[in-house]
Length: 85
Image 1 (cartoon, one colour):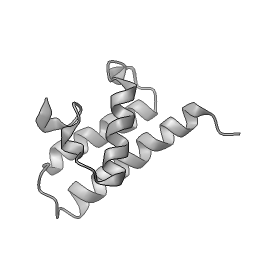
Image 2 (cartoon, helix red, strand yellow):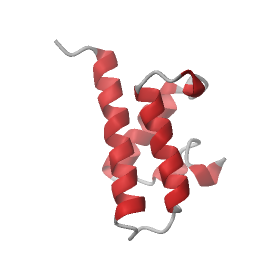
Image 3 (cartoon, helix red, strand yellow):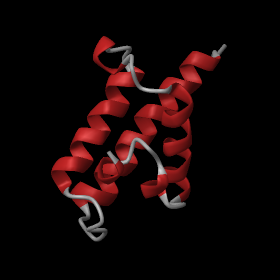
Image 4 (cartoon, helix red, strand yellow):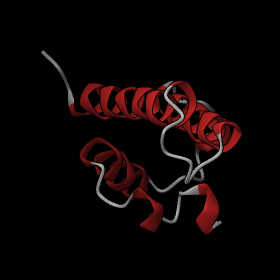
């Protein structure tokens, strides 16, 4: 049976994949550089893997950004978005 934690981790991994596909591999959306996109994708993967380097990331903000990425609904409005930092 899948737990809430498993679902959360799967969402983070899926968001990382979307970021890399949209901003690194396809490079059609230039609103985020490939380097910044990889850094953000690494953060999502780190969160999913429980890496302590990402303990300071607000889980609710990570979930919100992941959903914005999957829906392509203005992810740049997130506080986690590299340009917003």
